Image (cartoon, rainbow, N blue to C red; front, side, top):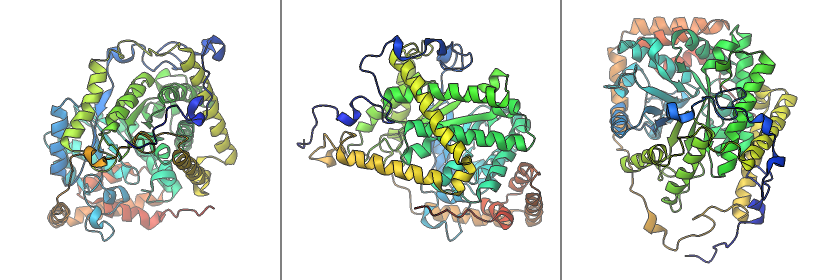
Length: 537
């Protein structure tokens, strides 16, 4: 063991959360407003959106998975379902995320590397072969091409003869945070917002049990911002979607029921729990007071989480098992509806079957052995938890007001204002770790002299995988009916010119004709162009 092992918590961390909220040494009733706690399942939903919590139904257990070919990913899905997973979470490779077909020169070595290659309906049919889409909840982590993937899923259900109104799951489909944190954008901001609005309005009528958007703070959190900023940016993005949908003639009391949220859970346990309690309260109040929503089902703040993102470390990777367990408990105490537990090796590679199953077992142990799901909001009423919930709510509202004062989310992204704030926060976080004001076990303290002793089993993708994907892509293009493809793409292109036209029916038609992701993207780019990242110093 190295000689840099601390004996006490750093002064910078001692009495504050990672967002800088002061923590009383001993919290008491004077530190919070008891009247604001409320009851579970009742407005403002501080204590959860269901009166019986998890006693009526546990959260959906997912593992984010996808790599290589559709057949390889299907085999992993079958393995996870056999291991007790209750929902699927599909990872797409970067070419699919960015709108490139596998033969495009831009796709290069990324085909099938960090997710499954999914360029057309034939691939999706293979991906879900033997899996009944009418009885499984499927989540897609996809943004720039989310409308196309959602259309493909609808078309795949049609091929399985599954009624569209039986489809359940969600598509991330949240573009503002892509401009801020991830970078898998394609179109400019405003056409992208239109495409997302199209998918939400379409889902309301056609797939009423499928959530066409999961408004995600997860990636801005991993990019460096605090828990408070993560919640503030996410809620601000949510309001931007509400305004966009209202401008399109949508009924907020109807479409709000299909809005869901997505976050990362990090290691400051009580702050993470209170982040979700505060978020529920703010969202319900804003919809009620700003938009006049009275239907309580439309006020519900429904969210899924990933336990383990940038909080996982490449150093001493088995430590991540403990980290994910702590984060999963925070997600459960916070009232998540869907949980994905990252595997301990996920800081450096796609999980192996062993590590993926172990991550799933973490959820199952907490659900079936710990007993913490037997009571609704078991931390509710704790002086510390209620104090942090109140303070977090206040801090989140302060950040949201700064965004409003700037001119709103869309303007702030187009100008690069939010991007600059996140980058600045990431620098402060890195500096705190370098100074050891924030401790990471195995990284800047308690380091092992023999890191090789904790190496994980290696996962490798066969180099021939990309060639297999490209060969099948070429075969599908050769066998499909070219006239149907051309006609469907032509209709999509014509519809894109009319800002009031919903593009989803045209995208579904393109998918049924086996048009590819790249072809659909190019048809829209011809009218919309591409996003140019702003420079801001």
